[in-house]
Length: 94
Image (tube, rainbow, N blue to C red; front, top):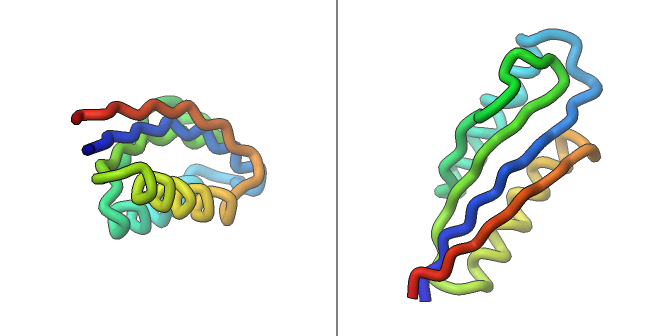
């Protein structure tokens, strides 16, 4: 069984005071996600100061691996903010 999991993450960052701070958070998150073999891009509202919307995608061989990666993602996001909205979709490629 092979799974492809996609997450659209909408993070509200009330502590951000300028675009330089937002960019630093985005770069830090994307770097750490890429080390976990997760593809990530910023998809919307790049010019809105306290809002960061990321699209993530990763593959897993089973549900346990997918759940572990998802937990790692949530840990990273909740380290930055408590204001998080996720939209998720999983495709089974078996």
